[in-house]
Length: 229
Image 1 (cartoon, rainbow, N blue to C red):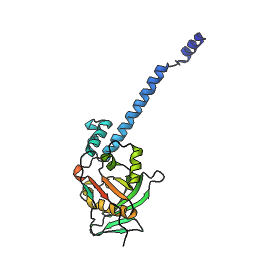
Image 2 (image 1 turned 90 degrees about the horizontal axis):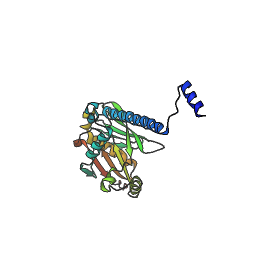
Image 3 (image 1 turned 30 degrees about the vertical axis):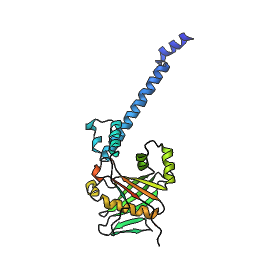
């Protein structure tokens, strides 16, 4: 039996791998796949404007994530009950807020159905339209205050607090510096849409995108709008 097996292997050139060899090959392929995925994520981070993700810096994805996590631990001024400029108007038919002085507008488009963990929005600025995606239920505020909360506990607490939290991206990368110089107006417009859509909810808005200097970071909190008298 074993002689026939060796004869067959010799004639066909096929040698049966041991279980250890199979495990080693699987581990090698898994490591190669992970390395390729890490490179793709780092490249995407760099394209998104995160300077530290430049391949020349030779930083691993784990190191980049650790740096970003450290940046997010920095205390950020929290604006509560911020008063938006009087030049901003809201159109309930289009879910759009517009600033009459600058012409900048922000419009809610749709939820990311069926997951509903994100929303689709539009920025209208300087006669151009920019599509962007906003992530919800991020839990940043609650995790800062309660670092031991796991995902399920965080979601439960957000439900009890009637809280909706938005992690807002760099909505316009084509003119990033021009956009960041108008970040307060952009967030006021975003808040105007959000608060009018979700009158009964507490709203947290966090602007801390990859690669954006800390001086531009914002954290805004809004209590539910009071019913019109």
